[in-house]
Length: 343
Image (cartoon, rainbow, N blue to C red; front, side, top):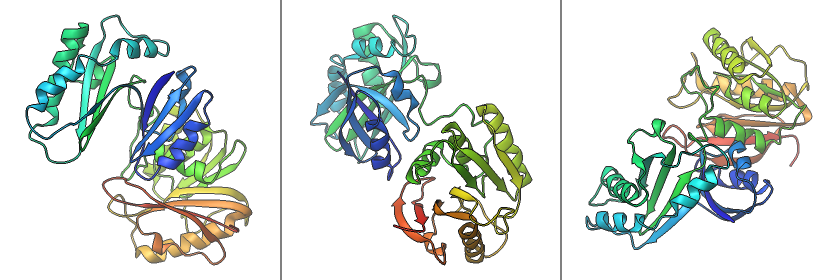
């Protein structure tokens, strides 16, 4: 049995926990702020296919009585002598090749004011690992074979080794970025909220760089999207090509969609909001017109998920609010709002 913990976006913990629990041989044991703890009794490779999580770690240690004083630096060094790193490296080697003497990096984060900083903790831990295991330390995570991550919360710490070569939320297809581009993990969570299935027709009327469309296409949905910005259309098409997925992408006005009434089963979109992007008119009027147009084209059994920091501007005549989840994104707290014809 391998103990793991998974990081996710604040607000998406329950969605990520459901995705993890659906994997064979994985049992979720607890969920807390941004973290899901689990046990895996089988292969680790399926964990790398999770779409709503930021990262997956093999748990190698936990520490109690973590204080704010500088003498903790020596304690971190001593505790690190006993981390189960060799077994973690062997387990990860079943997923991707790990050298006998890997190059490793250390990441540290903590809550609250302390009399030491993250870089000092990194050095303390790295010195121990280098001495105990003979591994070589690098400050650049991009060059490391293994990343050791330490999360200090109040007087407790949990230590893990990242399962993947790079952070799970990074997608290779994200080659062309746009202002306000949505995190792929959030896009995937939104798709799960409206139960997008293979064969469903998925619409994103404000597609930006195409993150929602690509995540949906990778799930087997038939995707159709558009934007009023020609550069966004270009970025979406390039990113879809990089992701090796297909779909229809058009330049249009989201307030006047060239689609038949009731022709779309699922709509998932990241409307302009906050400081991320803008529209050249009063935002409330834009939202009202887009909502009415989405209501026109969605089918009777359809669902709509919208991400925005101004959910009070969402106005539908017939669609009912089904779910609302506040998340953390871009230093703000936008809401994912789900609407449908019935509860």
